[in-house]
Image 1 (cartoon, one colour):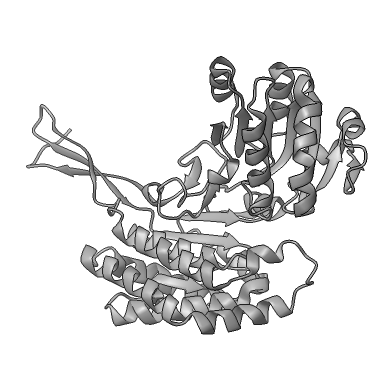
Image 2 (image 1 turned 90 degrees about the horizontal axis):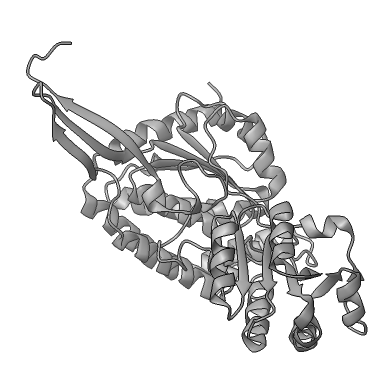
Length: 413
């Protein structure tokens, strides 16, 4: 047995103990973890600084890796929210008695052991651990080498708090950051029940193609914002700026602006100043390029720019004739993550909501709300863009499956 294999088996066995833990014990542990995180903020910032020191300082994705005091407070707040959510396991989904006297009950039960492979973002370590603990799932975490110091500090604290509260500390396991650990996790069919990749499209596709363990995708986000001809331009600019620059390195930030030709001159004129202030580089189609002439960070868009998830302060811009052309463009390039329209025309908004095939579809709001905490779910493991089991923010209520309990008194068939 390899060291990684032994860690996975220990997690599997610890998961059995977790399913028997009293609800108040799990809640108390999560609340204590939030407090301990805040009290140990200095240690986390030091560990995170070590990780950041190894990165290229010009890499815009460093924003995903970076911790600061506010982000630590945000993680602690999310932990407390998760602790207050109801346990989704054990819920009776259906109960009836058959004509032959059999008592049939269908209940929600934990998935078992959840494996997660993710990149950079250290808050994900806490989010996944908290959601899994609250739903009585053990978890095996495989973070990236970029966040190795931060992740080790996080899991050490989680284990310390679990042990203090009488919960088996092996319920949460961090695998070595080396890539060799991934292979064993992908093939641990006996001990891991579901695998969730979270990160770049290349990571997600690799896991899909190579995993023997069932996979729930959290897909890359090529997200669009369509400014329809009846849009309130002030609101449209505000939404566009927020959706692009508030956190450009995350999957719910927009990548392409689609603008109705009839309002493009007025809208793009208003948009230039805030985009320029934030340093947004624009990749424009020929029509938009002509209107944006003089914008200092302007590039001519290539065909491939409209299928890019930029994850940085870059944005493609395309002018469209009408909503039909906008919908056709989204249908071609969307990764079915988050899509939005800005318009005062309710009929066009409702059409957009119904026709766009994505996990989250918005009218007159920023795509940045596609987030488990922002939508009232406490936290999330990721944003699922597939259609089986979970879609959209993959949070607590989706970390369960079903189990049939049949009680008899000698019945035979």
